[in-house]
Length: 52
Image: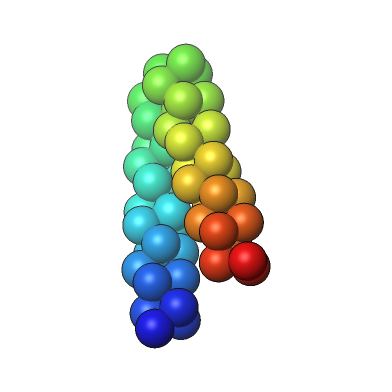
């Protein structure tokens, strides 16, 4: 069950990072930084909760 949730979170994180790259290429640095921060926060908290 954890593997399914972890793969879904990984997929969503990859999508957010790709959108952050697109936003960075569109010359919106603050938006890209926010998306990268959101993706890293999501990945780190999910790993923290699944490790317990």
